[in-house]
Image 1 (cartoon, chains in turn orange, purple):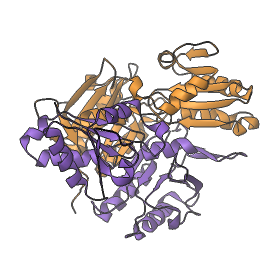
Image 2 (cartoon, chains in turn brown, green):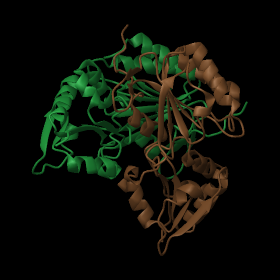
Image 3 (spheres, chains in turn purple, brown):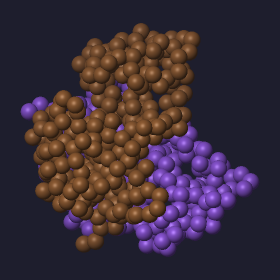
Image 4 (spheres, helix red, strand yellow):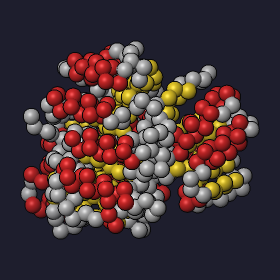
Length: 250
Length: 250
């Protein structure tokens, strides 16, 4: 048996957002590896071993997956959203590069998924309809000074912005600093969307302005989108829609 | 019959990348509207009217879709990729805002899809595994000076960058200016990926450096990804893999 490794995105939570390509890989797999809430989304069956692990062990999980694939297993590493956006794909390639040379020639493919910011944008309208920046607000793996620099530059460029991991329990102060910085650079009237658990029964959407936004509106299951100066709100009787027009005048 | 409007993403080209949510909306539709190569991907059937139109008539197409939905039709506007990323969703919301008030209360939902940059990133590894900017290089709808400003700020922030519509036939000089600007700010050794027609039989991937990149490597079916200073190349006997590590030191 020739082993392979697929790094697959399960999308934001609803099974109708999982691509057929990912479903097919899971059907062919002998082993599924990932953070336990994502592995829990895969139905058990004969011939499939589920390897669920805790958060923050991405490199251990990657090594395990690569070892299994190099022994001829058909392995799917599951991520939520898209594996290439603040998820498992980078961790697997870091592990490939640091590992035995033979790992470089394994059959490794990333299977894309619907990433949280695009699922959230779709639910609210089209706030990312023009140029935008995507920033992970966690300072676990990079200095806060770099996050702050990127926020300032994104605001100066009048990009819309999407934030992942906005507010952790252990370091909630970062998101408060982010909101302060954005209010001082973009003003209080700028539109902001808090989108939690999109496409699941616990979905919550909240469209407001920077002036009215408070840090507790976000947690680690929330993706946050800040509009550009051109982003507009359409009010109606159903649900607020926000979008960024395609046209920017001189 | 109560009408509705879905703005649906067909992904980059391969049917295994169309979400079940989009497939279901197409199965329920009475009308499908879009640019003709995208409408051509929808199978004809009894009870379904296909409305294919040419490029650059996004607002006419949006009005047509909204009129049909307001008359009780079940309408799907199809985009390639994700409709919220430089595609039809923003055009529809512009038309809603400019149109009759009743249009605001229509049942309008955006159904996300796999956007070109994420399909391209997946095929090449994980070049967007850390903070990145997404920029439309077409100056049809915004001044070139704004594109240049955003490129400079993205380079200063050491973001990875994804470019849509890099090089049109009518204005090919913009992409040459982009490469010149990036070479002067990021240096000749910076990794760059040209990904054309990803997931289709005509797929072409080319990983090179800014120093070796030439404008003719891109056309309007190409998405271009430029790495950050941390982006790495893993060489092997199969295909080059590029990725951006999750960790950035102080």
